[in-house]
Image 1 (cartoon, rainbow, N blue to C red):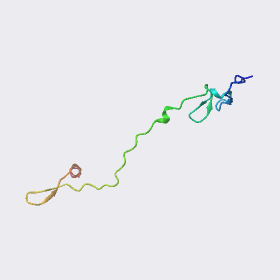
Image 2 (cartoon, rainbow, N blue to C red; image 1 turned 90 degrees about the vertical axis):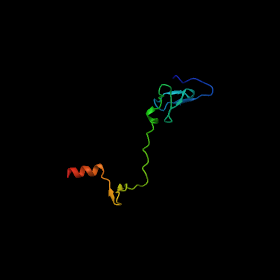
Image 3 (cartoon, rainbow, N blue to C red; image 1 turned 180 degrees about the horizontal axis):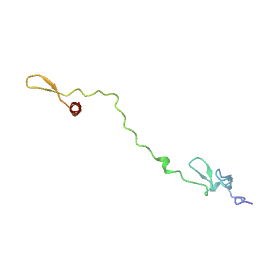
Image 4 (tube, rainbow, N blue to C red; image 1 turned 90 degrees about the horizontal axis):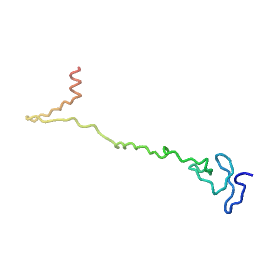
Length: 93
């Protein structure tokens, strides 16, 4: 005679999906992975299963390079503004 070999109104015997022992159905617990288990075999779901990653920002659909920066002399001529990259390339040769 086992520990579940007795009459209990409205309950029946079930076999634990984890350890295989016989228990009453009123003592069963539904685990997160849809297994019917006894109280000794029940384990909570790992909290790491619920971690959500931070989504990456969406890239822009298309882009264009900036137009060259220009300025106007007093005489009406236009000239290009020299940026730092051009100064480095001129000085390095």
